[in-house]
Length: 407
Image 1 (spheres, rainbow, N blue to C red):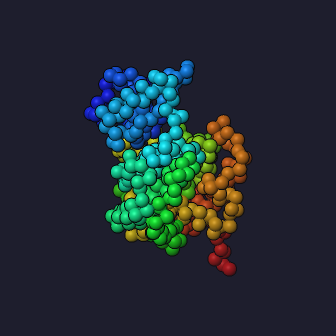
Image 2 (image 1 turned 180 degrees about the vertical axis):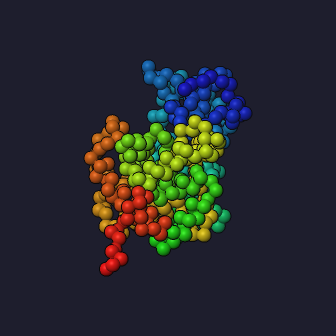
Image 3 (image 1 turned 120 degrees about the vertical axis):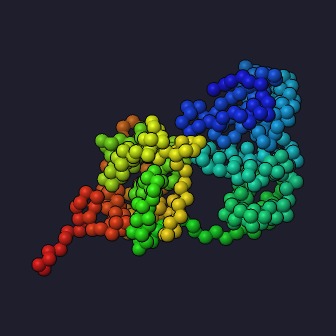
């Protein structure tokens, strides 16, 4: 979508970000004052650019992000770029000398080159850079020293924790390495001076002995949407993001299947998940939920919320049993492994690796889906046993043949 407006600081600030359900992933706003100057608005970023026809082709080049550049600063740079383009020079084909390559330039290159990464992952990289290294974005890489990296990493670790500090500098390291592929004169990556914080595994599964207590606490939650979201993650083994964005249109009630159109890894890894009887019942309960009907009428989301996206994010519930949402996924995997279900089936269910498959959107049913129904039901039955401390499944059938009391 393209719109013409006068770009001012307040006007750009007020431009709405693209929502997840928008058909277009970017909206372009062109300045009415300087022809060819504009701002591109995405889901979480606003980027200034210039656009002009060169030799019969439309050429667009980025200037920088709103927040790093003011509108006036971006307009001034736009004039210079448009003058070059008027002389037939394509700024996208000009190679910057290493001394002028900024961290922001390297980051843009890194994000554009990472086509295999999901959109969510790339947004996380951008967020970490903007949040913790914003003062480095316009700084040449040649001016960022080993001492700078070491001290900033330590500072972030003290204030925001070791995991954040390590994540920030993994992004910086990767961006620098991308720039190094083009400018070998940059020299050794300064992150070699960073003393990385040790990271312990934080996403452990809930021990089987604690599942009954955890489930009772979850069942007693007063918010039915958050309650059912946590149960849904446990019984599907989905990643928290995939579970949060489930829409009613993704459910095939007749085939008892759920389409996950954009899992981690993007649309090319879209897959179908068989739904156990427990999950079908849970989803039917969600349809009847009076709270959702009252506060979120007509919502396309299975787990709606008062958020910009319209759906639930990660609920940070404090229960007696410690857990993380991703830990629920690991619990699902642990239970599946305890049942001696084939590693192939487990990987298929949690989308760790998939064989070549047909287009899942061309009909929900597939050989893989049929093959996974029994393992999914078996895992669900076992989870019910562990959570409810009962010997019966949700259908009322015993998991094991009951012993004859006379024997």
